[in-house]
Length: 141
Length: 404
Ligand SMILES: Cc1ncc(COP(=O)(O)O)c(C=O)c1O
Image (cartoon, rainbow over all chains, first blue to last red):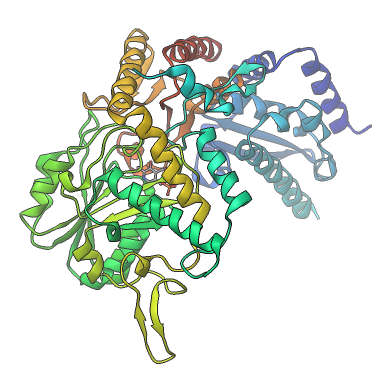
C-alpha cells in the first residue's frame, strides 16, 4: 500500500464514525477552523482555482523531492475539504500523487453529497494538485 | 381567502424528502414549482393532440392551433394588452430581451444611449452590451441607493434626447425592490425614450397591466409563473413591433418566400420563427388560469404577510445582514450572516432540506457595488407558509452556531 492510500484509508475510517451528514459536516467545519500553514501572499488571482463556488487559492512547494500543498478558502467547509486533500497529498512524491486513485472521495460519500457545481470544484482542486505534481516531476527530469 | 391545503396539494414536489427532511422550497425567484393542473395539461397535449400548428389541415393540428392561440388570448387579458398581435411567444425572459436588443439595433446609431440600472440581471445587461457593440450606442447605468432602490434623481439626470431606450427590471431578483415603473415611464416620455420592462420577478406576484403602466415592452418567463421552462412572453406595443425587423428567419414568420426576397408575416408571427414550444405555450395558459383562480391580489397580500413574518424574525438576529431594505419589496430576502461565508450556510441549509440560492444570483455588478462576494437568497411563492419560515430560522441559527 502506498502512503497515499494509507492516508486515504485513515480518512475513510475516521469519517465512517459519523452516522449522519450533519456530523460529517461538523467534522469538516472543525477541520476548516484549524489554523493552517498558508502564506497570504499567495492570495492572488494566479493561484485561484476555477470552478469553485467559494474562492480557493492553492500553491505547492517541494522539499527533498516531496511536495507540500498549501491552500486557503473563504468558506469554512471548503477549507475543511481542502484540509482532507492536503492530508492525502502533502509530503508525497510526485509519482505517488500523479498515480493516486481517489477512492476515498467516493467512499466517504462526499461526491454524492456535493451538488454538480461543488463536485466540479472538488475535481478542479484535485486536477490542480496533480498538475503541480507533474510540473515538479518534469522540472526534476 | 386562499385555500391553502388545496394549493399545496397541487404541488406533489413539496412532499420530496431531502436527507429525511421535508423539503422547504425557498428558491422561487429562480424557478417556481409546477402544479398538477399544468403538468396534466402537458401530458394531455402529448396523449391527445401533439401536432404542428398553423399548417395542417387535420384534426390534431386544428385543435392544437386553437389551444395555442387561446393561450395568446389568455396572456393578453392577463397582462392587460390591447391586442393579441402584441403578444409574442419566446423561449423566456432572456430570449425576449435578446429579441428586442437585436431588432432595435435598426433604430440606433453611434452616440445614442441605452439606459439600464445597477440592479439588472445579467440577462438585462449582456444583450444590451452586444447591441451597443454592434451600433456604437453607449450604455448608461442608473445608480442604486444603499436601501436598494433605483436612484430616481440620477435616472432623471441621465435621461436626454440621445436616450433611445431604457431597460429596467420591474422587481429586482436580488434586492426584491419593486421599482416605480409608472414614474420611470413618465420621465422617459419626456424624451421619447422607449421603455422596456423585465417582468420576470413581478408577473407571478402582483397584478401587472401593461396598458396602465404605459410601457413599450414587457417580458417574463413561464417557469417563474408556475408554468414550464422554455417558454416566455414578449409584450410590445403594436406600432413599435410593426416597425421592428424580424429577429430570426424561418418557418411561420414569412408571408411569401422567393430566393430574391421574402415578405414577412404579420404580427405576431413575424417574431415567431420556427415551430414554437407548443405544449409549453398551452401549459402557460393553464398556469395563468391556475393563479387567476387563486387571485393575484390575494397572492400579493399573502406573500407580503410572509415577508412581514420573515422580517420580524430576521430583525431579531443581531448577526443577520440584509441586502435590500426598501420598504417597497416583493417576497425576496437576500442576506449574509456576519463573518460567515454564504456558501457554508447554503450547504448546511440544503442538508436540512431548505432550498435557497447562494452566490451572486446573476447580478454580479450589483453585488460588486456593495462589496459583496455573494449573498444567500430566500424567495417565496404561493405554497410557502409561516411554519416553513419558522423552520428556516431554526435551521439558520443552527447553521450559524456550527460555523461561527
Ligand atoms: C429579473 C430577471 N431577469 C431575467 C431573468 C432570466 O430569466 P430566464 O432565465 O427565464 O430567461 C431572471 C431569472 O433568473 C430574472 O430574475
